[in-house]
Amino acid sequence: MTNHIPHRTYGTVPSSEQATMPGLAFVQGLVAGTQPHNTMAQTLGYDIVEAEKGRVLITATPNGDHLNPQGTVHGGFSATLLDACMGLAVQTTLEQGYGSTSLEFKITFMRPITPEIGMIRAEGTILKSGRRIGYAEGKITDSKGTLLVHATTSCMVFERPAKA
Image (tube, rainbow, N blue to C red; front, side):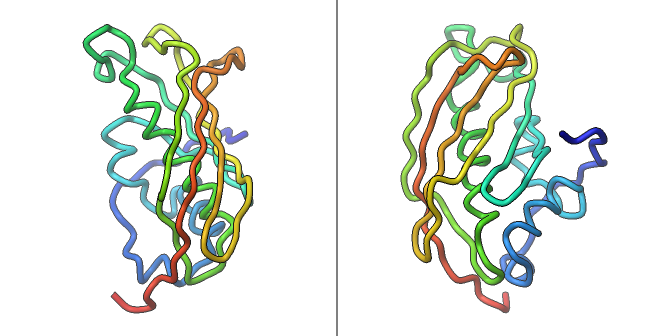
């Protein structure tokens, strides 16, 4: 578990720069703060806190800005956290010069999320990573380990251009 959260910057790393490093090194750079988090992380207030080959952990604390008309946290918040952690889990398995993007995504909401729940954990783990497709699953849990949301994804693997 990460003890120190580095100062975060936000932005987009050009594809040509990402092409120069293995996927695991890039994602670990997000955790360490040597690579900027994407701007959606800033918008929704989530943090990428752990990365190892085939596994990524994101944390977030839902608040009143994330509510749907029913007063619970909007499903899009959970979907974004899961899309991010699963996609990054696939990325950790890719060699230098390759990237991935979501092809298909399935999500199941097990329990409602409210701001009172506190910090949640979105963990993505690889199921299978191949030359063209990567498969991952994701789970959102509360501080007690209760499963709140489950998802699976398939991601297309592609070669990144070496130049912009």
